[in-house]
Length: 534
Image (cartoon, rainbow, N blue to C red):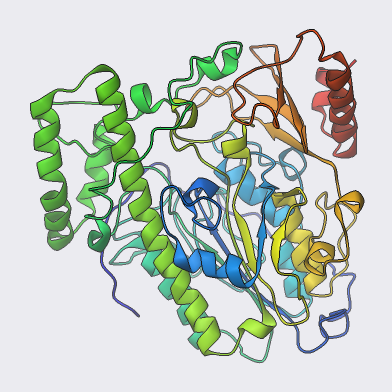
């Protein structure tokens, strides 16, 4: 296996619940050879790469302000880039469950990270692919509180996983520690399966799920010095006062107030204690002596300067922002390098003509917009997610795809690609017509439904649901709050001016209320019975 440079680990919560017996899923399709449609050469392979908390602002094919991601950009340059890609619930575990099942959270049962356990007996796209003769494998983050089902081969991380010298739960039933940096190790395992473990006579679906770029953004040792001389522009909404938006005001994900000076910003000091200091000591405690020496050599001068200069107010807030941005981008750099390794392997082994390569994230993330880090809200930065694809021979669409797509669409897309009939209970839409260039905007959905369930919980983001079309967004915060918000995304792309209830918006509000009610009925969300829309 390739030996790469190193870094750290994040210890949050481990795997606690055993998997239920897998439900036998009967495929209604013929073999993928028979039903490959317009791609009738050989069964098509799938490589699905998903990261955690990688936002489109930090991918240079979407946004050139901050970082260059040449390998991710290769996918967009030679394939397609979705310019309106969204999630149904901006949170890690729920997003993964939506992706696997093609269903909204209230239908697949995994509503939140803190209160849900994924029912592994339910149908998922890997099970349908297995039944159609595909080999299926997953390496990396799982985060669904049960063991994987529907995979011929798997190795997953306990809970959030560890950046340095990570633990892996293996299919054989044991947990092992692997030496090195997690992003590289997950890539090593994936490439080893492609080269040495799979049956090369069969089509495959390989899921590569990275922990990167999840909090607390600990870089590989070879990337520690990157971006230290770069000053990043502070977002225009960084000092948002949340006027007219009480749910936004109530959150606890402020860069200024809620980033932990030790856990998040690495300013370790024997005389300073924070709520998350113990967790940080566990993270750096996973490092070997060489890793720790490199880590300390980089951060100690920054620590010394921080405690010597005693910044405060606006100066301190913007110093935290710069540190956050630099550490985040170092983790992106390693991720981009490792995606490049996968692309190089596929190219060198002449597999690109017969393989769909997908890159996305489980949701978007705030890079200082509204003064925040994290995600959860239905606002644009966290509801949006990057999505780029390299298409196999026979799918000739290239360039941008502007239609609104959602992570519930991935499962039906993979099934149709494999020649498998999409089950009627999947709520997503196959993207294959878009990839073939056979549907235009007038034939596609004109709005998306969203529902976030995790409250009370970390970051204090209220429960809310809503609908978004190509111009307007309507959302309702509920549970211990009853607040509606309406935004004109054309005139107010930063979502600073809540129009709900303002004179002159009655017609737009009524139209969006109608779309919201229709979406809740279409997706059979029981919330409509608790909060009926007039």
